[in-house]
Length: 82
Image 1: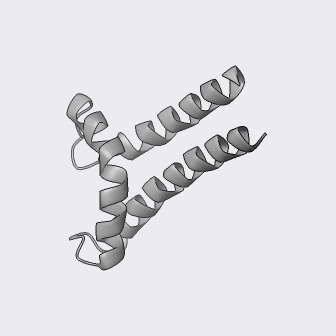
Image 2: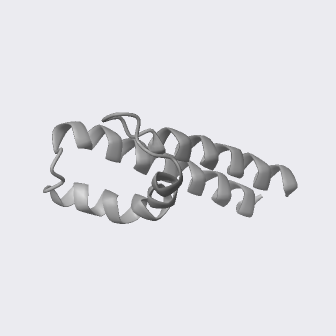
């Protein structure tokens, strides 16, 4: 029970961090605020590899959308296996 709750919460927090980074990029596009730096450090290990495989569409970076979808799928697979 604890492990399932922990894993579910971990994947949810990672998705929220990615969403926070996306929303904050509209406010701080240069990424100079301290919270922007923290979110970049926490989410770049997830978003970086996705960006290297899937290029941007014009000026739109779809890697956060794909990352959130993959995190949701992976979380469901892991929780389903437990």
